[in-house]
Length: 414
Image (cartoon, rainbow, N blue to C red; front, top):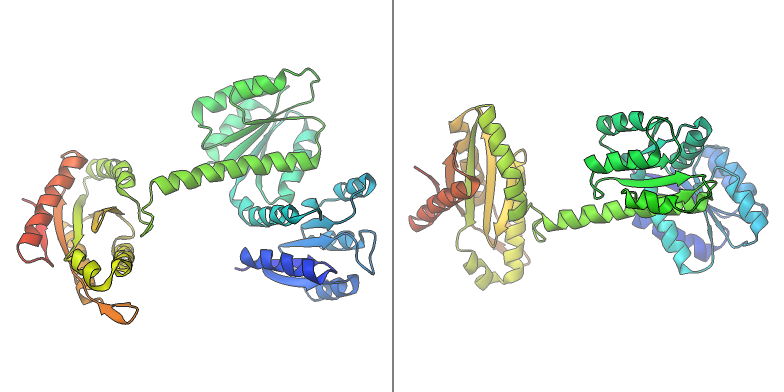
């Protein structure tokens, strides 16, 4: 469902910029250029996921719009050209998501980051660990404004239990001074079980001596905050660490994904298939591994061009997902693909593979002014106990036989 963004802004130029930012993130944007328009809009509906709020409007020059939006339980980001410290403190004393000075173009890049993560953060769990209830409540409230899913623990032992129970937790914010297991010990224990690529840790302490930052970092934390901290700094550090995790995940995904078809690549197939085969053997179910090759693929490239060849590879990926979406599928390289699927009945497995072959044979693929038809040859091996590399080699030999003996057919390895 599309989320709705309310833009409260009297400058038409700035409102258009924010509107474009919102729409680029798939928000449905409504603009209020005055307090009067804002009141009218919210009298009709308060169903807004978030709002950007100009501090000063012609008929509300002193932040009146902020109070009005927040009173309707709409999370708000304040945009302001007023830079004095009194105004800043006034804004931060309210339950806003953040405030952004309208200083330069970076302000709007930062706004885009906030609006993006506001949509994503509900999928991310953050665990707050502190023996002080008031400290837990404060940090949890700040995180909830940013739409994170928040868990709390009053000591390290509880924290470890929650980490085991909720795999969606991607960050731990832990105090230093706690009974039973202090923050340093907790950080050390977390790092024994969770890699930095999977989970970020921010240490927090009110102690005045300066070695705590280094102690936390040396024991595996990613960042440190000294109490009492400024909400702005808190949000910057949380967002930065969450973005770092997301960037690592993107890099890992790119390393395991074929860039053209977006299927898993050879490396990903090897990583996943060995474990899957072990599971199939343990529950005594039938499975097959198949090597699939597009017939006369070079002719497609030579006749229609390499863009057409790329298009055919993408169509192959679509049919593989359609027919074998519940199994493992991969592009191994060039025009060669692999699948690994299970079924209670061996004959059903072969029928599934043959239906896929028939689907490809019957498909008519439009490309620019042309239509392309192509077929595939397939080599299959059933229920093998050989190592994965050996199974692929046997299936590849069967594939070679199919291609040498007429193509557009399946050969089952002996």
